Amino acid sequence: METLVHPGETIPEKNLPALGTMKALVFHGPGKKSFEDKPIPTIKAPTDAIVKILKTTICGTDLHIMKGDVPTVTDGRIIGHEGVGIIDQVGSGVTNFKNGDHVIISCITSCGKCEYCKRGMYSHCTDGGWILGNTIDGTQAEYVRIPHADNSLYPIPAGADEEALVMLSDILPTGYECGVLNGQVKPGDVVAIVGAGPVGLAALLTAQFYSPAEIIMIDQDDNRLEVAKKFGATKTVNSATVNGVETVMVLTDGKGVDVAIEAVGIPATFDMCQSIIAPGGHIANIGVHGKSVTLHLETLWSQNVTITTRLVDTVTTPLLLKTVQSKKIEPNNLITHHFRLDQVMEAYETFGNAAKERALKVIMTA
Ligand SMILES: NC(=O)c1ccc[n+]([C@@H]2O[C@H](COP(=O)([O-])OP(=O)(O)OC[C@H]3O[C@@H](n4cnc5c(N)ncnc54)[C@H](O)[C@@H]3O)[C@@H](O)[C@H]2O)c1
Ligand SMILES: [Zn+2]
Ligand SMILES: [Zn+2]
Image (cartoon, rainbow, N blue to C red; front, side, top):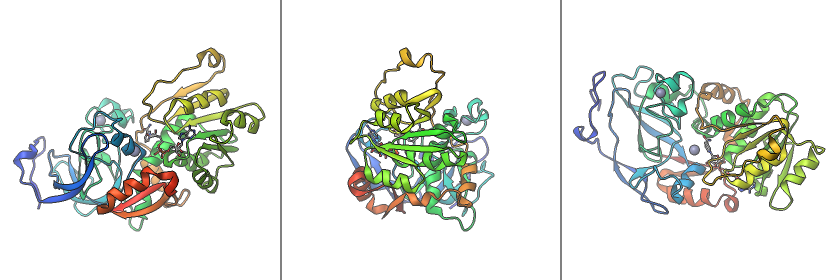
């Protein structure tokens, strides 16, 4: 059923008849979630689209939400900010998409018109940013409402591996933009990536666009370090069994690394980046930090070092899509488990015990 809206007109949700119910994963406060019936979302603004979810996944950030680390997520919220689907309805102001189109859902919602969007900083869109599965209902459901659909969805080319493209919603642009681009990885560089989770591995895959001489991967999970080797890491360090900083210094003949990418989000791993960075190097932070970190300016002030932070903008999604299409990178290798959406509780168990389950990305089919 098509909902009629006129340009410039916003119809409050309560005035529209619900089109029925759907199943969704709902957050009910720290440690509490349930898979329950919710109304199918309806168009609220002319620029909205309703997307029927085909495939979705769970992010490390969703685990943070479940722990209560993200206070903007409130009781009753459907979570999830990654996925691919089919356009089910569009508002009258949507011009790039029509019913039946297959799309990638970006984790970042952006109007494309505000000051920040014009600067390519979609993460700070004044009417968007990271809102999906945060301050508005997300993708771990049968349907999702996507505001500013024209700028927040990307068309899927015919014949593409849609499961692999779920990795374009968040982790690939995050590893690439926050890690590789901000770190300014160059040919011949020695790069260290601290954290071999899906985001660190995405940085590993996309760093290789620039032919660094070495990529040293550091984690505490041997399985993930094994995967990193297969993905192109030249050296791996298990910092639970050896001193991570000393080992990296030995591996680099005492020089340290040109680029240190932080992909964990705790003080210990940011500290490690400060200890292994070579003069003139770049420390690119990706991790979401909940605790303050000591900045060692007493040693870094003279080292010509650059430290960057970033919330993923997803401006590189079209570029990354081309690299997946041409098989320059094969993100489907990050997928370790498959579930149906109605097995979402089991999927969380698996992803939440990643080391034991040898899990990276879990795909749920709606
Ligand atoms: N900046 C952004 O826009 C953005 C976007 C998405 C995710 N993130 C953040 O990126 C980070 C990584 O995400 P992910 O999904 O890969 O998370 P993840 O939890 O799956 O991976 C983190 C990895 O760090 C390893 N680790 C933990 N403690 C360690 C230590 N002391 N030393 C070395 N390794 C250690 C773990 O074994 C794990 O493999 C998270 O903090 C996430 O919230 C940031
Ligand atoms: Zn995420
Ligand atoms: Zn904007």
